[in-house]
Image (tube, rainbow, N blue to C red):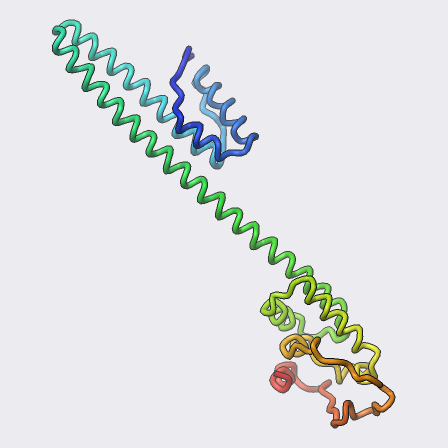
Length: 236
């Protein structure tokens, strides 16, 4: 059991990067280690910082033992040799302390880098989830549910926000009552509708003039029996 140990400021800099819960677990593990020698059971950044602290403590013990040994030898040899040995011991201790501090600095940088990566990853995941939810709102509103994978690709390429999706749905709802959209054969595939930005089109002002086979003054053709890819080429 150690009655005392020397803490370093760089430990505090490293611990500041942890959450309160992580820092609490780390300090409890540190005190348990110095009192019982029990190896701590930690993970992640806590484990990395604890490993460097343990290394520093081990180096301090070795340095203290080495200084004590050299002092004993110096006492037997004489004052001048004793001073020389103590100076060398202090230089060695300073060099090792600098090396330990450098290792802790590297651990801090690595920990900060990992946190930034995790933040970026979480942000991307949140963005993907939001886009998925927006697409499902669009898909639920669109009356012709074919080619969902292609429609999703077109939707993701547009990177729409909530306001644009609301505009899309409003356009879809304005087209649903028209005579033209009563026959599913004349409703564009959703991927085509998105690619051609059809939400910017205005629906017919009146549907009374519509007759089967025509729409908006031009001859309509049915695409019901065409292959999806051929139809996409025609609309694209």
